[in-house]
Length: 265
Figure 1: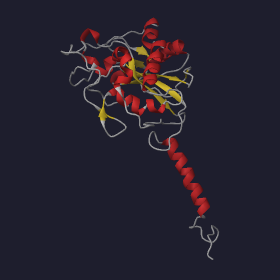
Figure 2: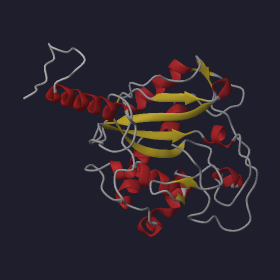
Figure 3: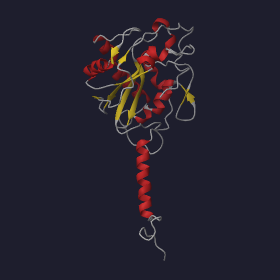
Figure 4: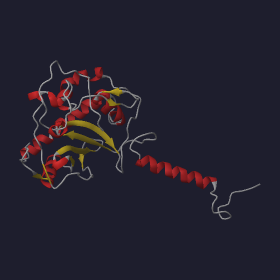
């Protein structure tokens, strides 16, 4: 009976060895792939915050759902982008269950979500099930479904995110340290990082758009929601700014609870 021999033919690999190699490759790919099948439980959370003036700067059009278009009620402080489970090594899990966003489940949180977690775009975004939906549907289906076993269910995901956002008020921490919204003032990146670190006992990640305008600020948490260093490089110049924004005005009619939304991470 013929047999496989690595010594007799270097081009032939024993089946057991070949299978082991395939398994190792699969493990590596699973660790490096940000989404898809074979996902393991996450390691920590990112609370991603948006600076509204930077997000609203390139608003193409106004619509009732767009937080940039609320006149005097438009956000002027950091707002929530999302609460995202992450992996220590690299990447993140996404679309972990077949759960579909249901606005009725979080109707009691509607006022706070509109105020602290607004969308800054018009239009819908892709969801996990090949459909289009709201910004909040996108955040829950892509990220919230992966927060188990720490957070289970839609209501708990939104409530937990709002609670943590309220507890760690980054805008107030920066204001108390002398960093306020301005189109002229620039602040040393290291000083801003230190101000957040002093308030949260953790090192944040800050990302910027053109000319050092702060776009997002991330605070990282362990699974007990204790702050931890983000250990992620900042994508900003040495001096940054927190620009102001003048709203394009209030749209007529009430702001719909689920309407147009943005395509974001």
